[in-house]
Amino acid sequence: MIGFLPWIGYALVATSSAWHCGALVGLLIAAAVLFVERRAGRAWGELVIPASAVVFFALAAGFSPVFAGNPAVRCGPVLVDAWLALTAGGSLLVGHPFTLAIARRRAPSQVWDRPEFHRANVVLTAVWAAAFALAAVALAVLLHDAPTATGWVLAIKIAGFAVPAAFTRWYAQRMAIRFRAGA
Image 1 (tube, helix red, strand yellow):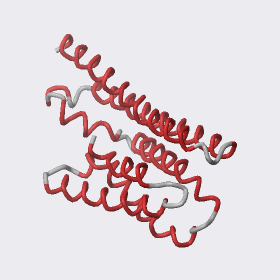
Image 2 (image 1 turned 180 degrees about the horizontal axis):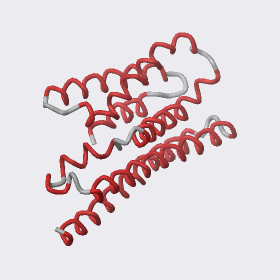
Image 3 (image 1 turned 45 degrees about the horizontal axis):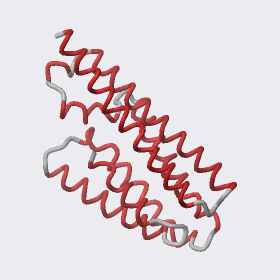
Image 4 (image 1 turned 60 degrees about the vertical axis):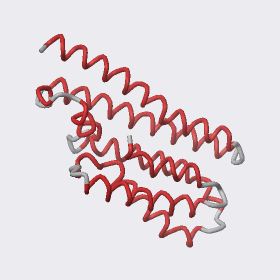
């Protein structure tokens, strides 16, 4: 999913001493993704994650001079996952799960209006929101107890994406079989 590239770029560049560089990289990638995807005709509903990234990284880059040298900077990974959890959860609250537009790219149009299709995307978005929230909590605890445990931070960040991605792949296949059987 191209929408997560800004977050991955940030994670690769940001460290406790260079988090502002990560924020700038995330912002540049997010802006580029939005530009490319909009030029390709993608609707805003399909771009919830990269649009959210533009807002987050613009705020992070804007505030980075204020917090330079501040020990609280180590909370950057927590803020990223908390923001993503809020983005995914917010899309559920407004009744438009962020996975819905992405799923429409892959699913046949005959299933788009089925309640099961919407419900499946509620489940998928809820899994992503929960994974991001759990990662934020795990990172907060880890960084409080072991602020230099960068290997564990990376492991939690990877798991926070890999687990819901694997679930999405499995669940989408399961739902596709169900839709074909019920068609």
